[in-house]
Image 1 (cartoon, rainbow, N blue to C red):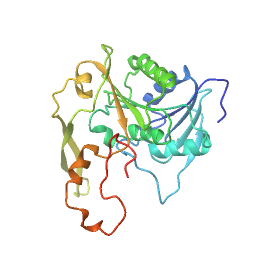
Image 2 (cartoon, rainbow, N blue to C red):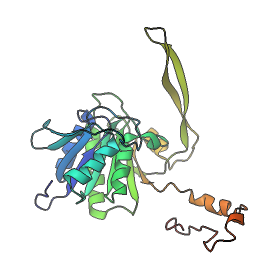
Image 3 (cartoon, rainbow, N blue to C red):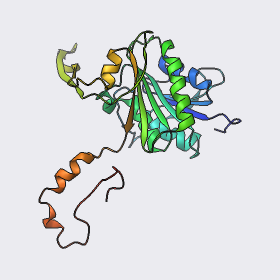
Image 4 (cartoon, rainbow, N blue to C red):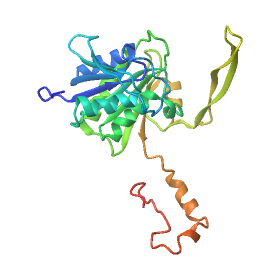
Length: 279
């Protein structure tokens, strides 16, 4: 990958696979902003989270699905796609932007934990690339992404212009339909899936299980991604990959754990005044 003129280099990834209509829509918007490279799984990888491939080879091949677009299919996970792009295509010279999606289905609230779309964006942020994950509230293979495009372009232009805070990426979700009222900066709602495993029987009379569930929102705040989407706003949540529960550090420091540290010169307490550089 060589940079053409002064346009930014943009990496486009997803988890729905290289032939998904969502990644095509995202690629089209990114072509208006810069030089595009697409790297995507060769088959759907939804729900893979931050999985990586170890212990077996990864296939990585150039494809020609759309004229004038540099595209690669990968046998690995969405995170593998980002890692291979950085190492083999950009050869360590990082792209200016990494965008993931547009996912067929929401990645709001707790869904961000399981999402292959968001994990690809997280991997981009780990590599210090400004990164954004985009998702639409529509699981259909032929979902209409047209109403998302102008918002995607605006958000990406702002990120390219201003950058993002250190160790931060954006999780952007779109409501279904073209009656969007605007964009809201939100926090992740406190919600989860109430899951059930439905038992079924295969043709050989052997039982198997199909995961089902109901999404439960425990959060009544009007500043959450769930509220925004329910009220026809685009939700934008800043996400970090530091999973430290900083608010819990003072609680743990109050426990009687010093007995094993008394003969050591190492500090016995951990503080986190700014949320970083924990010792």
